Amino acid sequence: PEGALRALSSRTGVGRPRRTRLAMRSMRIRPMRPYLAVGCGATYTRRLTVRCFFANGTTNGRSVSFGSHGALIEGMKALKGDPLETTGSKVVTYRGNPNAKIMVIGEAPGAEEDRQGKPFVGKSGQLLDNILGSVGFVEDDVYITNIVKRRPPNNRTPLKWEILAYKPWIAEEIRLIDPSIIMLVGRTSAQTVLRSICSPDARLPISQIRGKWYEHEGKWLIPLFHPSYLLRNPQKTPGSPKALTWQDIKGVRSKMDALRLGEE
Image (cartoon, rainbow, N blue to C red; front, side, top):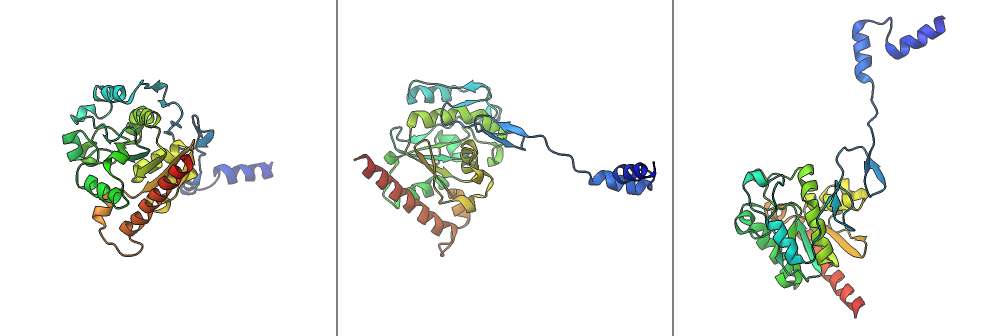
């Protein structure tokens, strides 16, 4: 029938010039397949998701479990077959106090961290120490580590599959340290952990989530600017990254004091 033919033509371009048919074909939108973020109860359109890891430290069917922090660090130092092993960089473990109630999680080691085998020991680490010290925190008050345990080539941002590969280790660190406060330093750290707790803010830039508190399973999380970003933006004017970081670290001090008062 003429009506059916007209409908077919409007959908498929039958009877139209070839250029018009190609244009219509290019405009068709194919729906994306949803992918399930295991353990989060949410569906995303990204193929690679990060599993919630505060409870058991598992990912992709793999897990690491140690009876003590010391055993964890020895296992980490013996790590083989991880994605960045072929770069020749060292495994960077931690610095600070394993009994601390404040945990600082960064992105990945840099050149100086690779050389010494400890996180945040270069210029960014010196600034981090100054930021913590400005509100009375010393190294013994904090436990400092990174999401990724080896230095990526040329200090590039870690890839998502690299983050997934090292995630069981940071998950086990969180379990064993059992901090009250977790400072998420920089975009990669903040987005990785917030995605893991299924926060919708995980997709937001660090400038929009810094200084905001998130509570998960009795732990308080706060994103902050990375010290390397502050080194590139040294201004101290109102509203500048350094001025905002000063506000954020004062918030960490106030939260820690309030938690200690609640325990007494």
